[in-house]
Length: 123
Image (cartoon, rainbow, N blue to C red; front, top):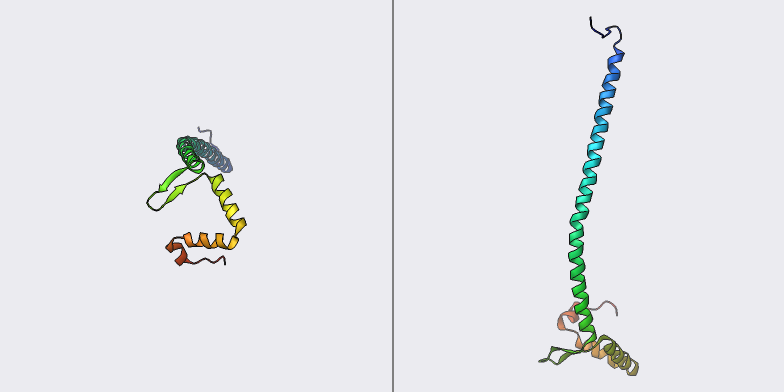
């Protein structure tokens, strides 16, 4: 004869819960492992991009540093030259201190035509 007892149907109900719980635990383990592996892979991909970005940023900073601290020709035909930023700030501060109205007019006269047409809402 069989070990099953036909008179006790609730015994089969617990087996269903055990199987369902076991399946849920297995699914959670698989999902957890999959998500942790994907985040590790994602970080590794971004690590390479971060290194490239850092190198580009370093080159840009070097170029900006050189241009802001040396003399140079921007456009000789139109008489545009580059001076160090500290020197330019000193000259601008001196000119503004001597005659603020003339300094402002000179700056506004230097604006390109496109920017003048766009309007200035700060006044």
